[in-house]
Length: 369
Image 1: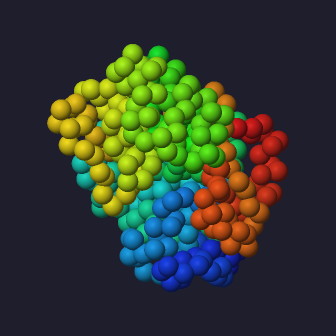
Image 2: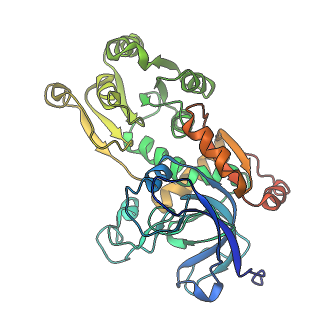
């Protein structure tokens, strides 16, 4: 397939000053002859907002500005680097976040489910290098994933980080069919996906949230038990013990960065079991008896590896996992999006449809989830 015509300039939503609103700038489009050997050039269909975007705006990662925002993107490949394997022009993709890993460190060399941990990479899309709030974007083919025909661009963009992250967290819990998984922060952008992934794997789910919207979403997506964290740790533990023979869940995934979230996650987990920590507060606060006397093990996790990402998309295509999104049309809607995100009323993930033509085209191939 011939390379589509690539424009020279495009509009992009950028961080131009820390702790200030985004600005839409006209910037150069990466050109096919500028691609590194393993790069993909993607015409962006959808880009999503994530909690990490706020951290980038605040200067947490301290990168030079301006920088194009959003590290969750999906679209169509329009050019490939000279050494790319497994992708071609015209492929629909969920864009990779790790960009230019070194390829030679212990993590890059395996095992496969640790390759995303390379510490010598150039950066992460939308965090240290330009992201997906733009018409075109570069991403690394080694961390990108082809989309099954059944999975839509509007689902794939938020799955690029949120989905990959919570899918791996559920896998890291290491549970078998019929066992109980707790999810603290179950009604958010990651949580509602985690519930569906867990149910697709045959697990029973306890969802814990502290917002009316989050509790509603947890019930909607199939949590077997939904507990209101506003009742306090003792109240939540009582509800969990009532359905787990007084022992607690077999493992818990903590998605909330609230001060009490990690402590609640430990408290609802049975002795000698694991809490998978996903949320990234400055400090994780856990009472020492949970670790010392109850032998709760804390296990961190990052985004999914390439093969884990493929498994996630296959699961979605097979089980019909859906992503709750609140779509905005076009880059000019970024002000409305950020207002909703910071207003505390967001259900699921806020996304921007960058290229509606791609959305219309994918309907012809049966994309539905």
